[in-house]
Length: 366
Ligand code: G2I
Image (cartoon, rainbow, N blue to C red; front, side, top):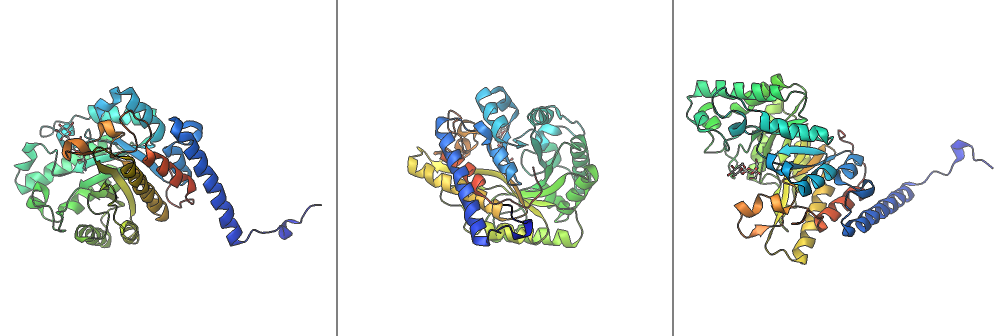
């Protein structure tokens, strides 16, 4: 006998929740069961596919030289759906001399991304670092013209290829004042940020325009400054689409206020993204530290899934061997989800399981 549709038993809220929990748990188990064999990515369990199924992306950064490393590219192409060039779109590479542009290194990364069905995050148009010395010495009017020409040329060159640009990177000091050693702010004042954003919008109207910084993940003086800036830009009608939270963490120290902080930004009407995630451990990394790191990564994934306008997560670098951490923080390392042989670590398993167990996310999709 058939039930008329209107009389089909309708699962109550609790029953629906229990059922989706059971499905999620089974998926998480399946993911976990696959991973210790080193078969990450088999049977549709890559981070990119799991993230895509939740309506977010999972990305990584890599440098041109990394493209010659087959163990690295095997992981990158399989696991990540978004790519950020580590250095190749920075000013010192793209415009080493005034008006003399070189997009060949960035183009190589863009072609790799395209060949692997990955999207691109453009990084970065205006930054005090990796900036050729000729820019620093310019008087204000020439610096403004140089900044506009640089943005117009670079964002114009990559028009249509870039999902989002980090238009201005690392604008703030830790106390929330504008960065002291920044030639753009020193010469042009606070308004350089709005000027850069407007110029980028004109050059590539479809790219999402971001401000990006580190140590703004929790509620603190620096994130307060970013919040005030974004609020003020929005109120003036300046084009700003998102804020990037770099998220260079120390194991066990992911700020408890991460979610509340992301939420206050999305309440301003912008997207948020985790743009440079890593989680460094004092070496040698023991299994307790790797387990804490797994909790940290999974926590970031769960937080992004819980914030509707958190569009995705990018890890900085692909695996521990190519990570910038040991070179910058001596004695620390093991900061990524892949070990020295590019095998998945507990942080990978936990991230994949958190994606598998997550609810569907109502954000722009991958
Ligand atoms: O420092 C980690 C990241 C922090 N947020 C902004 C990112 O753009 C930044 O990326 C790193 C790159 O991953 C490194 O690869 O930025 C560093 C410099 O600011 C990059 O390191 C530099 C080395 O310091 C240079 O000696 C080297 O010539 O990479 C250059 C190109 O290989």
